[in-house]
Image (cartoon, rainbow, N blue to C red; front, side, top):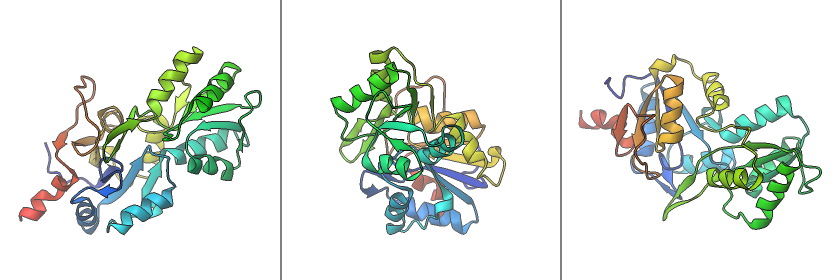
Length: 262
């Protein structure tokens, strides 16, 4: 294995890696600032859609991370980019929170709950999900609406543990309708990977992806051909025979541990 500080670019997951719930992970800001001081390229990638990009940047910068908008890529960015190219002005319905729905509307899409009108159903994290939302989505899919998701995470880490995320809702809708998800736009999708490639200034072999999920972060790194570091500050990871991290760390702070010991 190579030195953790020898990479040219570092890609970080957000929730569960740099923070959990409303608390910053100890050493996260110091790690980001040390890497920036070493002139490494930094990218911050998240499947989370309950806030805006400015919300996440404000939260991290309030804790000393110094992140710029150009360094952050959300699954909602990738989704909106695709919809704008292939389904402009489409009539959509989303199982998601208000900020996600507002993003769709502000991006030129027509949000509707009328199942006969809905052209695209989009699923993402919704902490206020209810039976009515699920049935609206299911009936629209049964009537021919295209079935998309902003992310496929089964759970989301919070201060008290984990909560149900989009993946669990997708499974329920697939069973309810007999229709499969058509495509998703978060990690580890090809859509997200291509978006990241367009932002990287170095080869993928010179890139380290750090995250708390084997099925998204580590899987994406494997598909991309990048090295990966799995941290234990987020979701509970179970044995996964397909994707293995290059490194297993307690937290992101271990990336710069050699500097701190010097």
